[in-house]
Image (tube, rainbow, N blue to C red; front, side, top):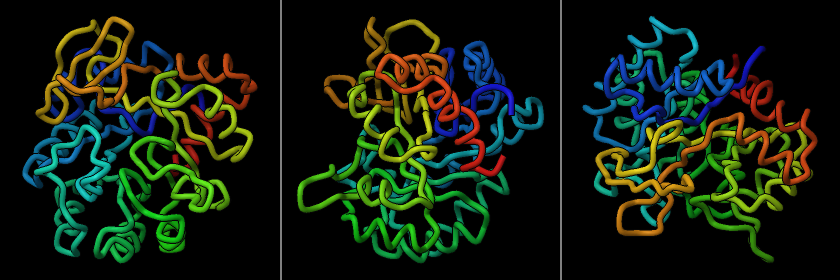
Length: 291
């Protein structure tokens, strides 16, 4: 496949995916100008009514621009302790009715979803989602390595932004990232902006999981736009002149202002072979989501 593939991106060019059709198309164009040929539109945690409204907008944008290939729901089935920039009031347990409601709201556009596997009912929800053709990622989680392994056995095949919003690798507890590294069925997203993950750790990840690293932007609307105050899922986000996006009044990272072409260069500067970095931003993510 020609061009870069971003499977975790919330917006760009001053626009959020799912807000308006014109804004969604403008966000796609902002990333296209940086070499991205296919994008999965990510939505933060929100009530089911909001998911349905945003999905309808994205569905129409998909009809107009085939660069947009589906929706990634980053929530609401996330661990409150690892919510990051998600509204805690929008989080929910993955009960069967909630899973069915999300699938219905997305109406065939749901390509990927992030789930914390330690939540009650999560493993069964993962099976249901995988059976429905959705790629399930483990993320925003306090899960142990064993809980992550149970999720992988149920069909989860991806880690949402490895190293971030999850239990870290420790001496006696590998955590979800350690479990993913040892499992050849699982690919691992990483935000290679030099802010979310130390470049040395990015290079180590490429060595530890060759052919399974997926570069993502996790970009919010400020990507390819000016610094200032933005909204992400209804929460205020301040973007500094060096491109760091944080929840207003905190040091909590709120997505990024990254573009995939820059992610490739950050990896190369960290010592990753260019062909491996390019694959991590193109053929690997394409394979992960079945393009």
